[in-house]
Length: 466
Ligand code: UD1
Ligand code: CA
Image (cartoon, rainbow, N blue to C red; front, side, top):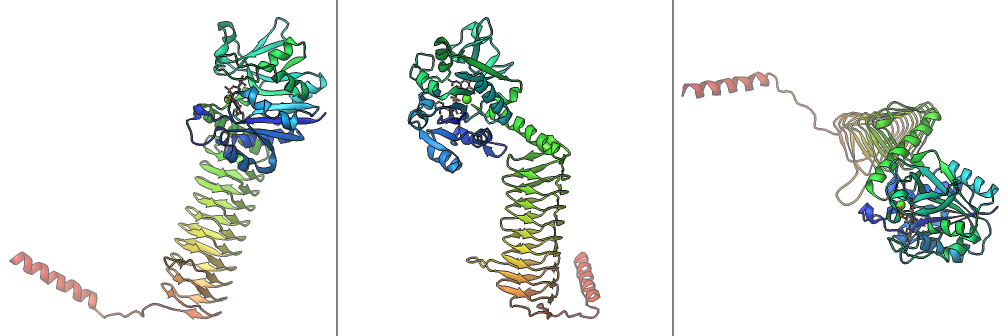
């Protein structure tokens, strides 16, 4: 049977008190509507229509080609929102999944089970429900004496008996597509919020003698609808647990899941250890047998196998296998480290490649540089890449040795196998295998230290006598 999906994402989300549109608020680094659409894709929906309104352009540009869009100009309720998809989907035959853009924790497994129940029992509507100890704010599922679903009542329209019901509407449903759009015609806004409720479709179908089912998930975390920042933090913590569990079951050791944050789109190889205080964000990829952390933040970076990163910050960086980073290193965008590279303590790298086997062990700044293989950059050596107006490139070729506290004033090149003496300020290129020394020659004044001390003693004596 053909499957379609409608994702409701037009609301402003007033209760978020935010300039950012509700469905774009991230949970574990990914906008809520992104989670929802990705989940919908997993259950093989042939068409996905996102209803946009508030922040339409922002939502569209975030989701891109992943969906079709309809605009709901005025937010008159969830039923009105679904109706906007009629022009696109009204003529289709099949099952239509309707899901809210603010329920990021619904899983594909649950959607699949619900769709299977719906399709095999030829229901007209199946609603995803959950039991909640504190159901405040959610629509309640009202069942008849035989246990069949009669209708859904919104919190604000509940009688005291209905208010006591603990089974809630998660806001996810499957419908027979044609019956959905014809029932929507009968929905009115005669209710506490004067909105066209999608939930009324359930009662309308039931009264018309249609088969209406409920599929109850036993994982209450799935049903969180994020309306405010409190729910956002709950969603974050449930999602975080779920992500950590997934990686641990795939062979990743997470020493302290409570202090480890792994984004929804991060991949991590087996036998990697995440130490406390590790934060992995964006599209970061971590290889196998790595040791990450403690206290490291890695964003949109690609880390090879057997890499160690301690107490460091990496952003849009690449680190080749068996390299070590930190403690206290900062790899900024465009940093590319080869294999067996060492970037040690208090080293900053920006827009530079450092090739296999090279070492920048302590207190360096490497910016806009091309560093070859097996290069040694001594303690405190830096590239001087910026003259206040423009950035310039430094090249250090294979096997070169740059002594401690060297300033490489770019544009400049240190040739293959060259040797730059410690303390030099290099203003023009050093040919292959040459030695460069660029500092004032040292002069020793014999016995001068004692002379200075004697003078100081004499001065002190004359002051104490006067
Ligand atoms: C809705 C359900 C409620 C359910 C809860 C689950 C209705 C009437 N109520 O309530 O039974 O328990 O979800 O989380 O459906 N939206 C639009 N256009 C609109 C209004 C809303 O696109 O005109 C979108 C919102 O962006 C949001 C979703 O629909 O993503 C749900 O709307 P929201 O206002 O959050 O509904 P709830 O009050 O949470
Ligand atoms: Ca909601």
